[in-house]
Image 1 (cartoon, rainbow, N blue to C red):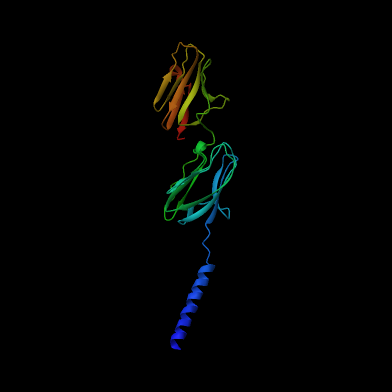
Image 2 (cartoon, rainbow, N blue to C red):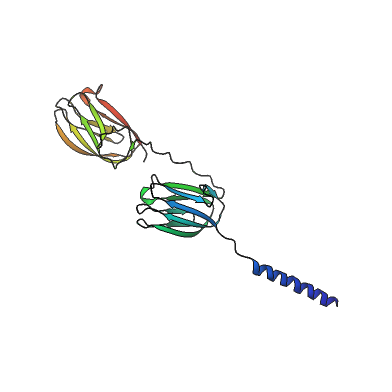
Length: 235
């Protein structure tokens, strides 16, 4: 009888474990949402809508909503490199396993301004990249350097806006020297070019600004009154 009682207890325990195992369901991956566009915006957020800054190492389900043909959503980091296609629109769902480290998401064509990052595990988030000043001119803009005919010299965009700050890169500068007793002189880190004083006319210069610093423009014979400068910042 004792043996039968012990056997009955074992059978009961085994049946209980089997029932528990049959009812167990795999843990669901935590859901995140990535968005890019329709303007120049990109984000990664939790289900509650909070911006993702730090996550635990785990498997995540990321729904990516690509809302612009000119942008894409590219996520990269330890063990992960996934991206939507430029030119495509719509929603994709990725299942990714994130481990300790730093992850970044960017729009590849516009990663200078459309980017973000977050950490997984105990990793310090890198300091944010300083934002460009709102008035910064980029190499997409053509510039005009004009000297004379009076005692004036200016550096402006093609739209007529005075250049105060510009990013590193290569610029096309239309130079107009409008007086025989002035010249146009442009100088910055790694660049130095000028027209001659007797010259009157137009030239086109390719100006490569590879380092931060100051870009100066002046008339050499009258540098005390015909001068100006613009700040060069990192792109």
